[in-house]
Image 1 (cartoon, rainbow, N blue to C red):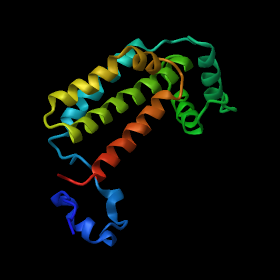
Image 2: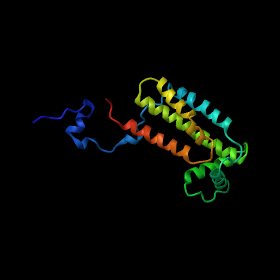
Image 3: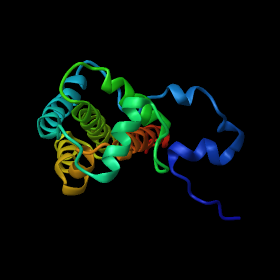
Image 4: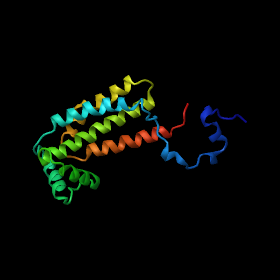
Length: 178
């Protein structure tokens, strides 16, 4: 009987399916965040965050914007498309004594968006060798028209992007090598 060829890294799994069992995989980090990697993460986060904070509007800019800012300020009921985690983070942002309440919530989205771009960098580093393509991926997303527009309004989209890219990064780290 012809046996199916399996890549070397998966051969033990093909011979023994019980070898795949839950373990400390939740603690596995795809790209080692060593001291050498942190400066690169900051080199993405700090400029994008500064750019978003500089461009963040100090007033309400959209209809939905007002609802999200008001809900955060009063810790009230979020509109139907809302997110409780975003509401709590936005409430914490409203307590920071800098700028208007609207600017604080917009600034929170800028920080979340910059963090999402850092995770895009980490995903790209996991998939592609070298830092230059990863830098390009992170900055290209960060200044793209749609992502930029969502980063500057009070919406749950930057938080969703951050969570999605974090999950993608963890899943990429669980993929077998080879």
